[in-house]
Image 1: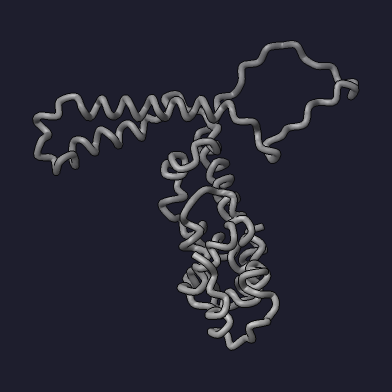
Image 2: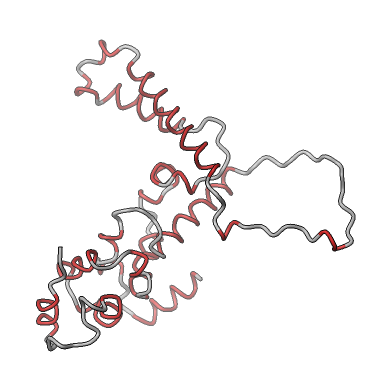
Length: 226
């Protein structure tokens, strides 16, 4: 879909040679006029900008941040782990266990309206096993992905003069709650800065539901979160 630049300019009462032009400089145009346009015109900018580019617009970042703060289902742990498995690097003794249970529950309650439940036999368990195996493959692939720059941990300076202990210590078991919290923080940060593969941007970015009535309150809220 091409950007209807003339229609957008006409809606705002701007001349056709207005700069920044909505088609040539869409991000700069959004910085100035995001709040003045209705959603049906704003959605056109999805075709000429990426979510990452739109993160340069403070009002859009604020909308995404407020959306995250609303605790949407799509950004809760199990849904987020299914949607972006490569971001999950926590421990998981049986990857895919929750997904397998969902497959079995679907067969029991919804397959063909439940009318064939006496005849499906072990189908639910079979589908569950398939889903668990797929999740295990995704988990193994995740661990082969190189660490992101923000995960980099500097090596110890060997010239520091400190004696390195050679004793073998048993590592502390990971805390699942901490792992999940770190994962969700990474997901939400990447969402805010337009780095996730998701259709949520086409809804949140153009929805003034996520705006503040008071601009000063919005600025304070965003600064406090940082």
